Image 1 (cartoon, helix red, strand yellow):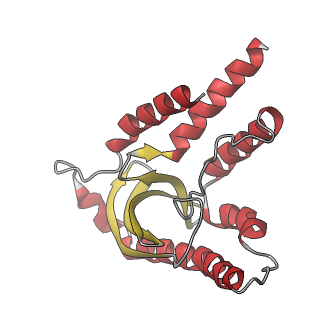
Image 2 (tube, rainbow, N blue to C red):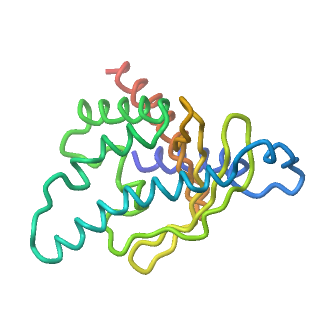
Length: 196
């Protein structure tokens, strides 16, 4: 399973590396017709909202106090309010597969994509910048701070119903895009299930 996952991650990295890097030959003249400041503000708003919950839970946890309506209880709200329809459809399918075929196992998710890790402390973002428009998406890069680690992250944002939503999270260190990984995981798991 790990070999297949590594293969999937490598294929996704190759596919998305081109989408989330600066392209010297890309014509960015179309970004003038786009309110790039609004996209950056939306990303900052999303992460401020999400990280306020994570950081509050972390503070309370350090005092041995359980937080009602914390991170795990609010996750569905984060996804519904801040992620695209396609992201949510894929996420639902991945979670359904894992609940059917990988109970008591790690399944697809071995980390939390909001924090790019498994645990968190002193979460924040910095250096949020609009990079370019790519078809229906806009690329926004940022630095995600968790503990003392800084992860360069690319978000592919999509305008849905007048609101900018996250359509993909891409770790710029690995080039791995999570949306493509989910699609391949679903395809592989569905094929495996048909063999049984």
